[in-house]
Image (cartoon, one colour):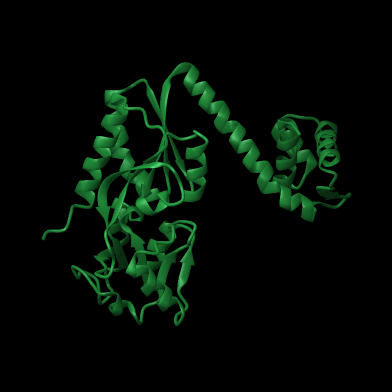
Length: 301
């Protein structure tokens, strides 16, 4: 299969129209039809049901769709990477949350002033997807908790100790407390990030308490940390999130962020495969460490 076949398939699947797909791609309708038929012949499967009234995906077409999208995305990434390398230097960073991206804004601003010819590339994906990209050399490093390293041979550089927090609306009875015990959340409906967002932490007692809570409550499981914060702010319950998933702007949502006592602090920093000891990376990592230590200072003893 080739790029044009994949482009035609995805365009028709998105538009459910050969005519609209042809217009989007600047192809003729017969050309789009030809590429689809070639792809179906190669896959030995019918991808669309087409008649005078409708165009819709077959079960095989629906199953193939995410793979086609991913193949096109990977081609785009490779093309962009080659283009950048041919004209400018670049550094690519993986993030698992919008909060990390917010944190990087100030850091990248200082990086730009020091290295104006370097172009940053930031990828936001789930941690398992970023691990694949890191292994394939598609990113230089990723923001990560130490738990994300398990099962890999990547190196980890700790930048800060991180906690997990209960996030509640400012109007909540617990709001404003310096710290709470998990037992104070017993009657709350928890708003939890989906497991694909945060690796399982078998050595953290907070994880066991959360799992026990799930057995007796209708807790939320959310695939976007921004939605977790929004639901908490709306009063649906208490969100339980690690610090790296709490953006600096969370107070705009009128929220209260409270450390949970049973949580064990965990290392947070960067995960890398072959990080060259270049001056530009040293500056970037140093600025991230400073930013994180200001945002999440160590607890006073």
